Amino acid sequence: MFPVRVPFLAALVSMALCQYYDYDYQPNSMLGPSGPNCNQECDCPVNFPTAMYCDNRKLKFVPVVPTGIKYLYLQNNKIEEIKAGVFDNVTAELRWLVLDNNKITNSKIEKGTIDKLSALEKLFFSNNELTEPVIPPSKALDELKMMHNKLSKFPSGLLTDKENLTSINLQYNELTSDTIGGAFKGLKKLLSLDVSHNKLKKLPAGVPNSLEILYADYNDIDTIGAGYLNKLPSLQYLRVSHNRLVDSGIPAGVFNVTSLVELDLSFNKLQSIPEINEQLEQLYLQANEINKIDMASFCKFIGPLNYSHLKHLRLDANNVTHSNMPPDSPNCLRQASDIMFE
Image (spheres, rainbow, N blue to C red):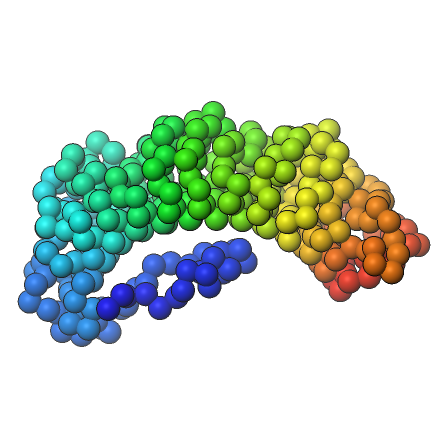
């Protein structure tokens, strides 16, 4: 029985709303009796015979995984190393590997461990001490999470054959624009990429045109490349809040693309509202230095069929108030049910 109760699509929508979902988890009290084919330090519930729960056990090493296990939970331990041979029984079987909240470094991951997992679909490796990514050879990999590590580089080519990878989360690392320049080469199905809380000076290069969600909050981004979004025809959610964007770093019309549903430019240094497409529904501009409101930013033409589809607009913590709204704003922003000035 596949131990997951949240469909991927629902999880993706949840992420778009900034509610990051976790892997399936059952408290120990709900696991029930453990099956016979299990490491003695873990639990393999009879109702999920292919899952082995080794979480919250104060383990310092990864135990040997028995044949038949497809879902391995090792989060919230004190694991410092992964010894060779621990996955030998499941190299072609293991689907999920959860190693979050441990103390693993690259130097303590021996050869013959993760590099032998040929069927892995999900690798969760957050809150460890990795300085560079650890990528299994599996072409079935569809989700990669390495948040809260010390990643300072992501060598080009590591993901070239990962054609089924749909989600990558690299929040809270030390990555720069140069060190991830070729990281996403070869990906064809990537839907979601989160590089927030890093040291990027520009949006990541080389991302595939399949991308629908891009989060790059809390970086050092001061410019958006002209035509960047034109290369991403499926992009719906773009967040670049808490960066260093100024008016001169935003080329004319760069955000005027029909695919965008949500655009977050809050907590930057913008003095004017950039031009957006009439199809945009959510625009966040709070905590900038905006001192004027021009309806041309929202509507090129105003008429019975020409108006902005914007529903939510945040302008609080700027240098404008409701009195700065032009007389024609009700006709242009006729669907805006929420415009915030304070």
